[in-house]
Length: 174
Ligand code: AR6
Image (spheres, rainbow, N blue to C red):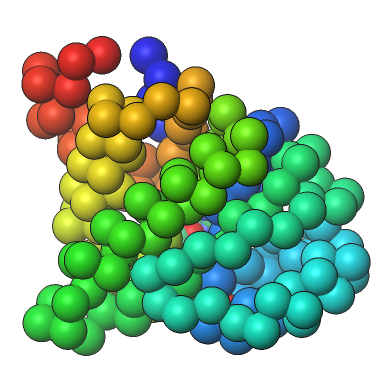
């Protein structure tokens, strides 16, 4: 099964790339972004400064520095504003852009946090359905990625991902 759902801290994962739920400045913040910058060390911020930011729905790649992961893929999820400001399409685009950038850079194993579900306020069940749906579709349609790990920080997030995956599994082809 190329998709795994785990509870834990994404900064500990030994994968080719971990995904950061960043903001458009790419200069760090709280939540998983703060944890990744703390664990990677100051060189990560130095490299991020050179990128000049990232629009919502897109992704950028850097080194992983002191992390076990070789790369960090920074993506910017939408702020939840009730669901009428294109939030679902923007969140879907984060997953697709991150996976496409991974393939371009020879990343075969990748871990995602639940993008937008913390500070940015995206409802967890809706966000998990989009996350799982986009990853399943990408794996089915494109080659290059061997393993995708969803790293869930708490039980609610983990359960939402498991339910979405179970719903999709019968037609996922895995
Ligand atoms: N490992 C895995 N998941 C985590 C970790 C961790 N170490 N820490 C938090 N989470 P958030 P967002 C979960 O707020 O909603 C930052 O300030 C968390 O429980 O990190 O996309 C950025 O700079 C939640 O389920 O990201 C932006 O300004 C998920 O990660 C803004 O927050 C995402 O929560 C982005 O907000």
